[in-house]
Image (cartoon, rainbow, N blue to C red):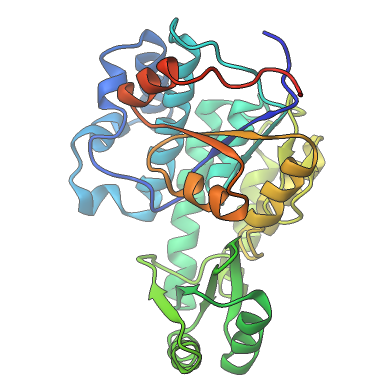
Length: 318
């Protein structure tokens, strides 16, 4: 399969889950069954059953949902690669939003699936515990530019934690800080939407998780990525093992530069993005960053069938 300079694969993060995800693919593709079975064996419990059947209150627990989204996303990639009806172009970059960065590392051959599901389960546990030690949450600020959100964050004591796309920036902080940020946003006729999370992710309130997570990451085996993985922290490629380890630790308490990541890939010739995994959040963000970019969402059999019948994606630079 020829390398394409116009295609990137991107992988979703926490919040994209739903009970039943991956079930239609599990019964249709041998590679998908192998993927879920491998994750179940690595974790020592049937994560696949949680993905397929729920219940939602168990699936959405941070230490469960992170490996669940990761394995479902890899299953979607395996199904897409196995589908004979799809001529899938190889990516020149891979990227993921927060948790999705771990999926991108698996897709790039930098991290095994077995190690990845164990790592993100520990990540989820530590993020939840950090949320208990330093309580907080997250707000999506809708309809404000970066300067306005920075002013609100400075005045309220919150931090910018996700630069998602124009008009959608997420902040994190303690409850009092977010309440003040909400008041300031509404004073500017903007919306502030609370996110259903267990902590102030990607902010200084995640600091209690850093030391132990750094130790865990140091004991995981990584390989140099076969495809450049775009860093959430710097919006630049991760190309070696040391930079990957450093990235995963920093990512816990630093802002996710999603808009910058998409713009970096776009500036280097990417015109088509495959969002691979549950949900369609990233496709929406990408189109808001640049409406001329093409997006394909792949979360089930119907999506694969639609890709097969749509105009074939470009496989070489124009």
